[in-house]
Image (cartoon, rainbow, N blue to C red; front, side, top):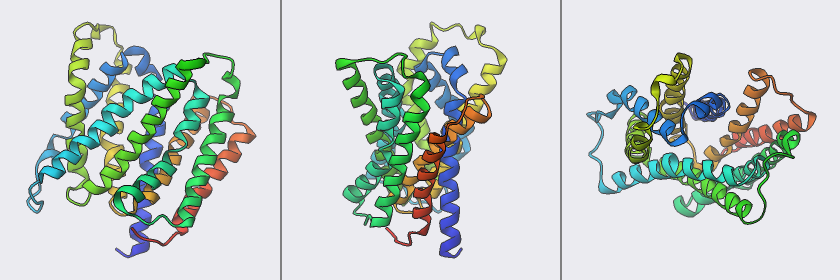
Length: 304
């Protein structure tokens, strides 16, 4: 495959991965209402583990895992699956939607900086400009989308400060997930990485999930909710991770990070097209700025 086609495939995988994340986040409201959050996470990893059992088998051509690879797999799941969920959920509970959107808009820049610090990747001015577009676009999107609800549920003082700190912890977890994933793709295939980090996520969630499961009335859950849960599990733990690892293996980390901009864009589009929410002119400006970052990334010809 020629370099341009290879890059196009990588960009498509990353964009689809983040778009799928935004979609299932927007459509997961009924699940959060039906299940406790930590039980929902445990069920997600359990369902995905069953679906990915064939992916656990070591390919004949793959070298045995080194102790470093095993450590990276654990850290990938710990930061990207377990700790990210905890920081995000509890951060939002202590903060507000506007603060959450603005803090999470820093993901592309943090990923680029972490890739430079940990992997020694060169971050060219064009990529920094693209990261800036992503940050600015998502910040405007967060403010504009939150305007109608600005008078609800705002926590002040120390709780707001702690909430924002936890949200930035989620940003660091997402950045670490991206950087560690780049390292893993050098020794393992995307399918096996997806299956192994999901298995670690299931193990980490089991103590809390099992405790909640023993007290939960599963018979009260509607069939439609179970169907949505299966979709959520397969999308969150199988589809998005495989797509991300496939794309990330072909690009520098700084390029991969730009595509996190697709997450809020996808979530808002699902809100407008599926949930019937309105889209303001300011949000359209945010979309244009954010998408400009992807154009800059595509035009950048640098390598890791």
